[in-house]
Image (tube, rainbow, N blue to C red; front, side):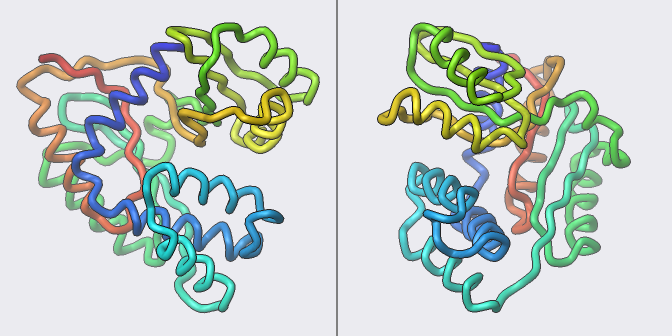
Length: 240
């Protein structure tokens, strides 16, 4: 499980340089959460969690407030989530999550990136079955027994828990996200999460040769430049 966390961090590092629209990404997610569950973070756990993550990523308060005000005012777009999948340069599997108000436009934009980079856009389900959809929590600790007991007492379906290099990683189904976070906070009220997110973790790894790394990075960069793209997940490991 430690490897899964490390792979995820490496994946984020490979694509982070190209993600130039972090504010827009969080603005859309916060807008959607506030529109679905109300603009009061104390009564909307999804919104509160997003705001916490946004602040950790240094999103300014005015960006957060603008998204909440927009949702509360009943104006703005109606975004829907979408997941695209395929084979990226170098042969690794890739999932692309998006929030879109025009699915035809978004599909066309993503298909264009695949074509430019000689990658293969797949049909629904073509590679997603090779990823585990999980809520992930990572926090400091050297013994997983107490957190595991607390989660079991809270009736959380723990998929995996691991302790490595002074960090504990917990994986649970996405539906148990808030139940897990609440249980861990009750165990340790001052807990700080290094990671608290719903993600896709690859079941296998695929080495990407040094010759293909530049093309993969171009591919990821072009995707990240698309306004509708929120996250990119892949199973690539990189040489060199």
